[in-house]
Length: 76
Image (cartoon, rainbow, N blue to C red):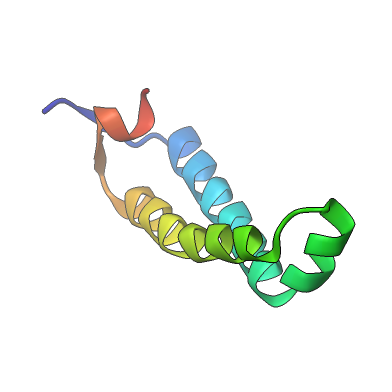
């Protein structure tokens, strides 16, 4: 498995993505009812995606701290 050295730009990008994902997760979990009405989406959909985003943001933070990242994780 090939890996990519984490540059400063990659670390910043992963950290920013993790922060945005965590913020959206909190917003969806705590304000799900208001968002559901405003966006005309099912509340359960917002809750499910909020639950998904929490571990995803943790994975992104973990990748930020790694000296090298598997190529498949950052290049699709």
